[in-house]
Image 1 (cartoon, rainbow, N blue to C red):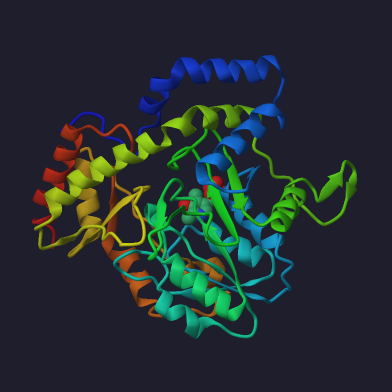
Image 2: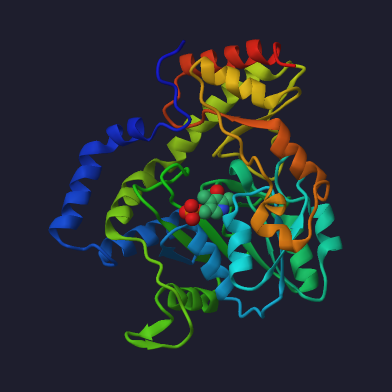
Length: 378
Ligand SMILES: *Cc1c(COP(=O)(O)O)cnc(C)c1O
């Protein structure tokens, strides 16, 4: 057994920046700059520069980011929001929470992102927004999505929580960061995300000055002037300690991505010819930043997961129950079989250890063990 393989190794990453991060956190405490202040503003400006986005508005977490984005669009109760069911529940949750209606579209099984060929059929006269989720670190087909949105006058909110730093490649050769293509991009700085802080954090991005102003207000109780709310808002803030952690890590984000891509390339090569394993497919229109390395397994996936656990290899299932089949979302009327590819992915995929600190030896042990055990499952 190989010692100490983790699904995500946040400690190893911390130790490499420890003096810098410890000092920055101590400064925040010394200056009692707990909420708001220069550190938060500086990080937002740095991230805006990295993304080439006009505005980055930090907030409390990725779920809030999605909620703030939807709240900025002046939607009416019952308006329909098209999104994927193969996602973390937050994407659909905020839609439901605001009295809007989630409309789920199946995924392309190769990419795990929303199947653009099925979006048009889901559009009604109540549809207002499309929320593509750049799941596992690869962009949805944004050029097609933006064309559909333009034709039907819909907003696009990108759930970029898993893909920060990914590049989108347009057919005309230009490149843009994911999360800056739609009207609004949302991200999470949850510790295990590709750019994670040491608690909760999130942000919205936009190039639209009006939406930027609205989201700024909404995240701060709807207040333009202190103690005088213009609109109904929420309290959603990134704190100073999280901002300095993120500021220390942002300059390394591209290296972190490269380390993930290297581990993914190693896994790819090991599994390439395996009859029972399908490796993650790459698209022509996006880089892949590998928030997760997720494979399809032919055979008893849960048996494989258990056997790997016994060999000291942790794995995760993203996601075991599609949102449309979860109890809270039964009222929407979806049934087992409603979204075939989404349900198949929930049943037959497994995500392997993926983080910035994986060594080649660890990847080799993981790949060899997966190959051996995949041959033994029923
Ligand atoms: C993590 C995540 C979120 C929510 O982010 P939090 O910071 O945990 O609220 C939303 N959508 C997706 C796809 C995510 O992976």
